[in-house]
Structures are given as structure tokens and as C-alpha cells.
Length: 149
Image 1: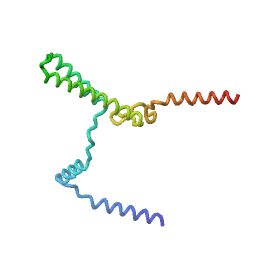
Image 2: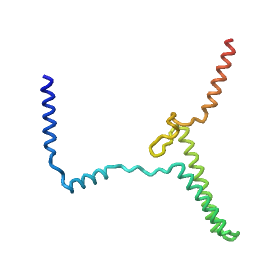
Image 3: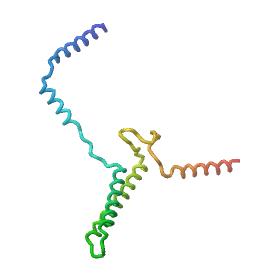
Image 4: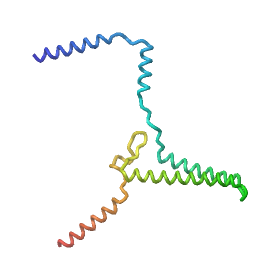
């Protein structure tokens, strides 16, 4: 009885494979390829902390270079303003990048590079107060041990 069921399933599979024997034409294959490419969702470009830090340093370096090349006097307000704006933008980008990186570390987001997890996969990432908490727990255990003796 069980073998009849298997035979029917095999026959159904064979019937379904014989229907698709006709090879698609070249134009059909190209259309299918284009459909697959359009279905892919493009992920937005996310600038990592390294890129933000690099952009900030480059802006600050550009401001210092412009300041050194132009050597503005007190009458060159435009060049001094441009240099100040570049330096300020570089500083702000560096600070924001550091704050965002710290927030990711505190939230437990593990850093990745090319799809691989950094840090050997040791959990959710660095915890800033873990050592202080461990010391506090050890201190409480010592007090309890001394009280019980």
C-alpha cells in the first residue's frame, strides 16, 4: 500500500519534469535575468566609524593646509572663515563618529568586517562597567564570607 503512494508521487514528479523540457529562448533568459536583478534590494550605503573618522581628519587636515598655504592676515576674513568652518566640521564629524561608536558598543552591537564578526564572537561586545560590577560583587562576597566565619 505504501509503495503505491511512492509510485504515484514518482510518476507525478516525472510528469512535472517532462512539461518543462522546452528550453527557454535567449530573450526569455535575458528577461528572467533582468527580473532577478530588479528584485534585489539595494542596501543603503552606511558609513562606518572608520570612514567618519577619516573624513573628519581629512577636513581638519585640509583646513590646516589651506591656512598654511594662504597665511591669511586679519583682513582675509573669507579664507579665515573657510578654514574655521572646515576645521569645525572635521571636529564635529570626529566627535559624532566617536559618540556613535561608543553607543554601538554600549548597546551590544558587534562590529563586523566583510560579513564576519570581529572580536572572535565573544558575545554582545564590550561592557563599560563590567569590571567595576565584578569588583563590587567580589567585595560583597568577601564581606559575607567574613560575617559567616
